[in-house]
Amino acid sequence: MIVEHATRSSRIGVALIAIALVVLASAPYWGDRQTLRLLAEMFTFIALASLWNLLAGYAGLVSVGQQAFVGLGGYVLFALAMLLDVNPVLAIFVAGPIGALVAVPVALLIFRLRGAYFAIGTWVVAEVFRLVASQISVLGGGSGISLPASVVLAMAPSRLMREFEMYWLALLLAVVILAAIFVLLRSRHGLALTAIRDNELAAQSTGIGVWSIKFTVYVLTAFGTAMVGAFIFLQKLRISPDTAFSVNDWTAFVIFITVIGGIGRIEGPIIGTIIFFALRQSFAGLGSLYLLMMGAVAIVVMLWAPKGLWGMIVERLGWQILPLQRHLVLRKDARGKS
Amino acid sequence: MQWLNVILQGVLIGGLYAMFATGLSLIFGVMRLVNIAHGDLIVLAAYISLIATQAFGMDPLTSLLLVVPVMALIGYALQRGLLNYTLGEDLLPPLLVTFGLSIIIQNGLLELFTADSRKLQAGAIEIQTFQLAQDLWIGALPLIQFVVAVAVIAGLQLLFYRTALGRALRATSDDQAVAQLTGLDTRHIFALAMALSLAVIAIAGVFLAVRANFDPAIGPARLIFAFEAVIIGGLGSMWGTLAGGIILGVSQAIGAQIDPGWQLLAGHIVFLAILAVRPQGLFPKVSG
Image (cartoon, each protein chain N blue to C red):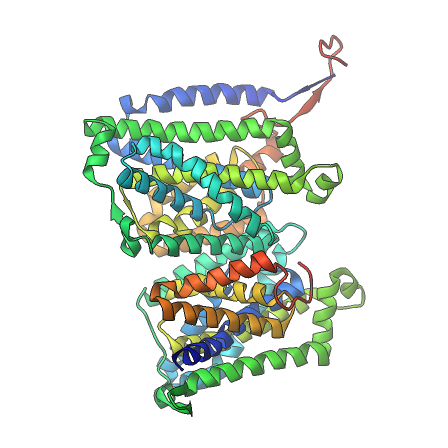
């Protein structure tokens, strides 16, 4: 008997992912500027939703305050690029560790709150960050600030090259974050996380250090979220406290994506992002009615299909795109230790 | 004297926060539900009062006679029709469903009433004041609001500890399964608790709308104030919640006096400090 991760569907899935990656990486050769921008935006949402999914879906830490780290990342990028003349692309990678560093004291404080009160606690933290950001006058205070043209020009000489560079950066960020989550979930800690997802009390009784795993996941998520935030505001070229710490943009949409796609599944946020963008492209003209509809869809999904679209597919068809689940394979000529 | 005045105004606004907070802690106590749409429901009450004043020419305070029962009905229906289905071991469904609800209420109000700021006009009472001491004045409306808040909390306290409904609510809070075994219909009890919660925040919503400008987007900040007052006061204690509201109100007033940009920040910082030093709150009664 041996333990395997891969199934036939996951072998097909991995092959499909490889093809998709090649197609997406070569998008600058076949797509126009608008397509590239849309795809890059989708990558940032896949990354944000995957990180939130790790936090809420696996570690059971339902945060409605991840905008704290999106905004923090954005502000770190602006501060580094404008005040210290750091190359903005490099600043993205500095924003990650700073996000993680800030997350440590935040976690120590809000981990005192449990369950739903934890959720609102994360929101208070994001509000504190927003109010602090609006007090920093060198970064535009309450009204915000734009990135000077010289900083942008330093990235790449031509506008086209900059667009390409930003696109590849977005793809790289999303792929690295997804790969990191995948590796984490495949590891010993991933098994512990899945156990916590399924039943926290039972996980604790088997000797899993629930607190320290949750703490680690929270800090790692902040790392990734701050990097994505830095990228988002490099793309936007303008930052203000209200856009940087927007609960709608960086939490409501992200939760919607994860819930629709399938919470607690690595594939969920990817599927959810595709659905979210398809809906947005067709109904965004409706304005607030569109948001209202989104809220309603999220409620309906939560009540009737709490595992989301991908969860339903998994239950009905047993597919998995990425080989995560462990299962036993019985073979007469088992090569592994039986 | 200036500081005494600031603190006094903070105490009075604290009464309003305490009303926000009792609504929130009431339903958490009975069914362990945290309603993310709580703040938006407060704003909804303000808009219902706006309709009542505009359509029937009611005075805002008189409109309470209409707004309170309407909100209680909404609460009962919401709980029976939707939220009861989300309750269970898993924390995620109630959280996400009320989050969705919050988005629906916000954008529904935006669609119906636009993003314009509104305010309810209460007439002469708005500018009436009493002199407490030299240079120390107190507004009639803030005073009424504070007295009403204390009365609401005292009333809830009586209801909880002196009536059959209160006994049923406490029993359900202690152990849902056992409460059910003794013949209580917990679905009905939960719906009554939500009706009670929304009746309380209906009062708070109307006072909020008389006191200051409101628009569809201000709900989440009210949820946060309510939550902070609950945690500062300690879970499960109603008088503690009043103290929590007052502490929050006073902190904000002092912050605003130092620098207008510090009003909200000061409140949050006091909340975080109490969370760091005394996570169970100042007057806790139940644990988590």
